[in-house]
Image (cartoon, rainbow, N blue to C red; front, side):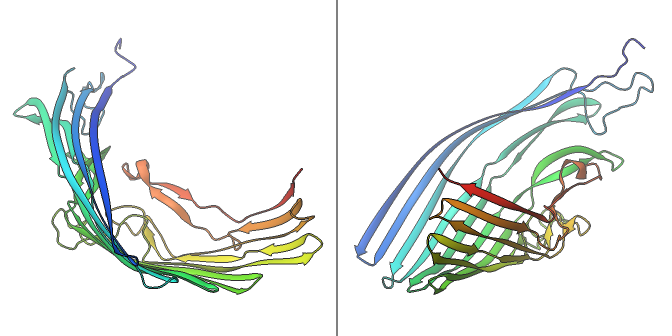
Length: 348
């Protein structure tokens, strides 16, 4: 009984060092065309460690921390050095004073992971070291931008290809019970295809109409390279479609008085909060209406404005799962409910 209350300690350690150098050069063969090439070099040193002091229960003599292995006061360590070359290429062509077109190719990466834990082999506790490969992405993008008269807009298309897409995997003990611990692993290849467009029209000197649209088809490829649970899963917090639109009124009456108003509406399709995707921890389509309007007086010296967000009091989630999800009791983070108010402003 002198050893009660129970106490345990486990610790993950890490030391990361990175050195980077980059260079860009731009060539203008003629006035309308700009070509840019660049490269970044990275040199990394990563050291990880693990220790655990998790004695068995003083009463039952059984383990109290599921899946945790006592290192007997020892700290297991491992280290490694990595480097990478990351190029990029850009092209900008001015079709006219009103229209530009562009194209980009670039390479990115997420650093490798040196993972250290403990394992039992033939009754002995030994280091369990895993090195997770770097995540590499190639990004291809092109589009145009327009600004002519009362109309401005842009259109972009991008495609991203990932190798060794890194994911966090919840750990379970020998009985399949969650331990609350996570490890990093490769889910294999992934890709992302998207289209974005926006348009604004100055209909009159007091009315501006705007809108934007996005489409994304991205996720882990259906190749089963890591696990069937990850194969084909969509990326976290990524809707397939999203759009927004509205208008702004900015009308001056004279004598330093002005009326302004900006109502808007946004819409997005279903999003998942976890990879692999769990339909029970997801948010369906959400449409929100917001507005702000008011008057200013004496050349902006005084102003009164009203605003409302989530005008129809839509219930929706910003996030779910999180740490509680590792113990099968996910944490839910709700979005802002209907919120409205009045603002009074005076400038002296």
